[in-house]
Image (cartoon, rainbow over all chains, first blue to last red; front, top):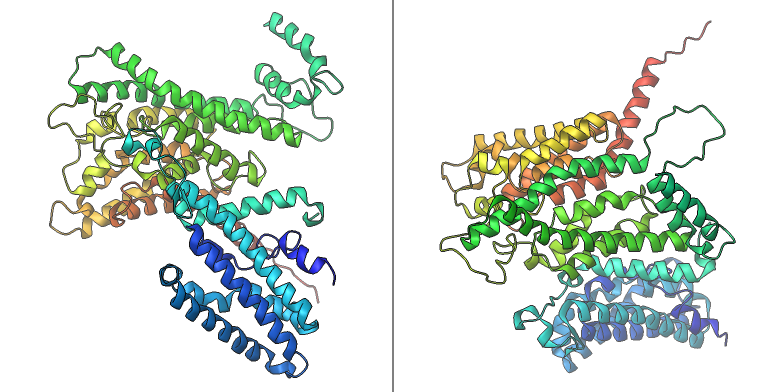
Length: 206
Length: 389
């Protein structure tokens, strides 16, 4: 199998920083690491299996109704993920609230089905879906680490910035409230894109 | 002067291409042109010969800022004196304020110019002078007690996200100084709001006189308590950001800016007109309840908070304001309207000047676009094509 299928989505064709898909959820769920991690996993599973199922079905679906079929498949997977989250990690599920349901509208999933799964064999499709989910999840987790560290002083709920630094304990430090707000996630993604583009010459427009 | 020129000429080869420190070329160039008018001339086309360039323009703004800055220093001492019940003399107050404000200015310049020089070196550009003014404006629109590391962070944010990302001086969409303030406002709201932060030492609980309140007039207006008298607010004996309190000092700056032609009087005038009209309108429809915000007299709005400072120094920024002459009227007028609307109707933010200007900065290109389009349409209508039969 071509190595590009599982390497490219992580870096050179990263769905968030290069294709600029799935931005909405990466702004909404990255305030804390835990929900971001769960979201990343959920999306990875949904993209992977949606790609697999659509690839299996690709020769039997009439072209004109393929979008409807895709929606049914993705919706089924999203409901499964939602139910599993509610059953096994209710707290996180509550934090993510509507965003689990909104995975169905994540452009990465439909994009990968349309662009890859409908024209490729099942196994490469599965790998492509998982890799794209992972590329999305990687950005999500990096952003959430930065946002939680500077916005709340913790990572995954553990206090990283010493409590004695805080102004209320006689120190000098304040948490950065802007990190909690969605605009900062957008700015962080923008900075990622900036850094990636300045290293990767192929991505620079003339 | 001649001796200085000699020194500069002597070290020039070291910094030129191929010299030992050739990579610092743009840094050297920045200092040389700061000291002397460059002797390079344009070789083609017709030009009007004028000694004014970006550096001289910026210097005029710095001069215009001096009254507000000096008054701000004195007022810092004056307010501190009031809050502690001390008995400082005029020069004592000024010296106290000077020592409080100077660190803000130094931090702002060191961080901002550091980033500007680094960015210019990396890109191999000349160092632009845009930060000369921003670096002065930022301390003047901060509370005097803002922690220095927060100020440094805000300056870095403003220069990198507000300016370098868009391509440096002259390319920015938003006023960098206001962006620095917006950063502090949203990231560290406790450091730029409330009634403690505006007076030196008050947030650390230094000796406080009974009944003394450090609340700004805007906060008073928001809470429905009486605001200081018009003359106090006009002369600036009120708590507030360092440079924004005295409308009189700002007016002196405005006169310098208008006389030298650096800032547009149209923007200043229309901003004031917009705010005044909106204020009068709100006064007219205000309920009888005297504590209602709508009852604040329209002219009080012009001397409260950062209105005057924003209208004179921020809204008129030649890069981020509207460029067309008609556009300037619209741009200023909308700023005036939105300031009063934010002040009167938004319970979250007592001050609206920063947000109003940033919002209209965003819309300035759109305003220009429509002004240009309407001009084109008008001229097309006038151009009658007669076809001979």
